[in-house]
Length: 115
Image 1 (cartoon, one colour):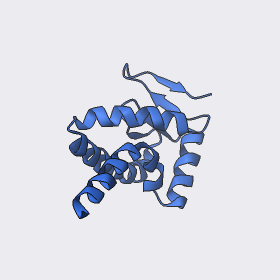
Image 2 (image 1 turned 30 degrees about the vertical axis):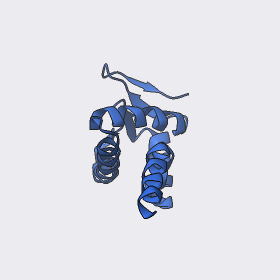
Image 3 (image 1 turned 120 degrees about the vertical axis):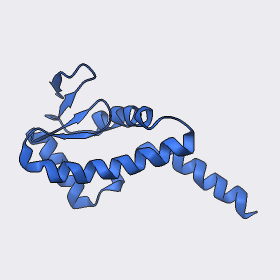
Image 4 (image 1 turned 180 degrees about the vertical axis):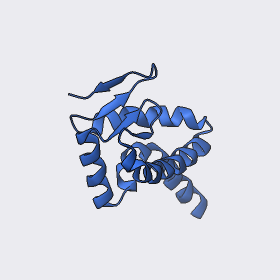
């Protein structure tokens, strides 16, 4: 009886995974991330990772990306897909949730700003 419930929880976690990414950060860090994205100090990539457009924020970016890598790896393992595929899926959700003014680097390497 325990196994089916555990399986249900695993499936639920996978299905809701995209909704959990913003919750992976402490509230202060999420607020900092939104402020940095809106200011253009950091940007997002089509691969689902953060980039420091201002080098003084590299340590913050490294911290956020380490959390994202762990999440992407867990989801990829659970779904049996490559990690980079999971990152690209999350990138779409990150774009949708990001504040106006956020810079995004597309697969072609060009930067565009969210309106």
